[in-house]
Length: 195
Image (cartoon, rainbow, N blue to C red; front, side, top):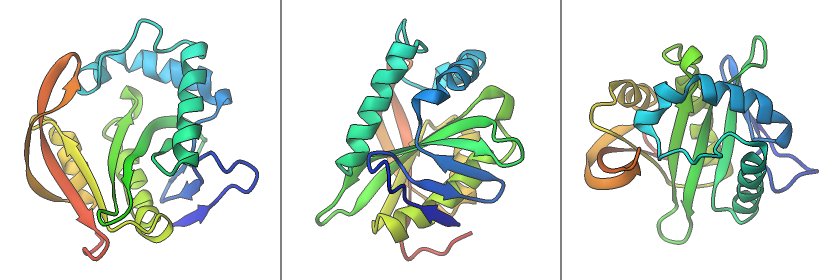
């Protein structure tokens, strides 16, 4: 995996290159492709995400999202990435490293999504595998954690394939599609074996 930190834009996530995918921070120029992918994937994504606002896919909303991403990256609080397929540079989904904790904790939380046309094709697994060394080698964190709803077998499989271990059950962890939902928690540590 290669990490190329942007020199000209310190408030954007760096380029991360994986096996058949590459990841970089979202940009305003991504809006049309992102909005189209999210719209065609709405029914597929709705059960697994927070409730979408009425203006979720508008350019103004996306612009606000980009500004928030830039601020969070600059402040070392979160690192959002879009996942692109290497063969044709198509946007296939996204990953976010959020809740970056320094001090005695040294961890962050991983979230991810794939557009419906690209789900189940291994792109998210490849993206997560590419981000693991970035978390431990570039961000110098000790722990990467993730959570998914108990019935989300596809997501649990992604985490297990990437070397995450199941650690427990969190009641009412996240408000998903308007309802507080339980989640299964997973984590991988810097010293854990890589798959």
